[in-house]
Length: 282
Image (cartoon, rainbow, N blue to C red; front, side):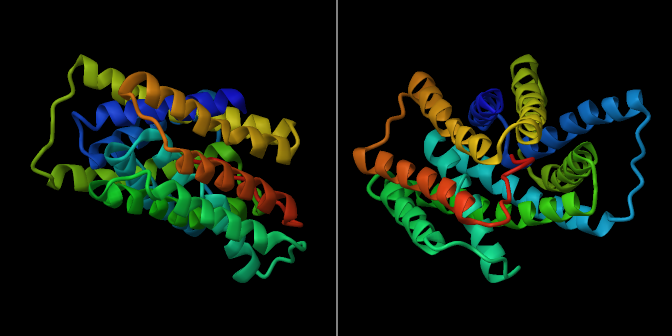
């Protein structure tokens, strides 16, 4: 899980560096395309079947995941890396709320208090951490968490239907590439890929796929709450990278917000009787 967190944070670094050269549409396309090549190669070598009777659920997961990914990449390009990652990691809070209110899953006492603490953490993180010119990035970051919760709801559904993780990742990556291609081609700022840009794009796609594989292994082999706790180390790694590469620092209230969001995410995971994990994310 720690390896997955480091890889997700490394992907975020490549996205932020790549945003100086590529648009969000281009980054999303190459993220999906490179992932398709990697997972597709695995599928070909193992001769695994891609046919599925649950294509509609895959499409729903892919579309919501695609939108969340676009918003997340856009947020990374506009605001400090640690803030963008933390806002994206509000998705467990929204997912827990969906499960409680929409799916009608029973929850333990203290569940809603934990949710309130998480959303208070968002307020602490956003103000006064961000300037007025960065609020659009904050909207994208928080929006990525909201939309991602819908994607993870479909991920859970696919798991209940018995779909293997590699097939879910493949269809999501393929839909991301297909969704990003026309947007990228329609833009007037399409850029040729040079050596530096190619390495950054390879980092975006490669780190993302490797992180997903590590995360899947962690949740399969370890305890869910421990894995969920370690998943938030992505925020720590992202903070370190932000300081190292861009001199980004959070205010005291910003760190209080981060702590509240992480604590709330862990508590809602604990209080949910049927725990849903943040799997196959970013």
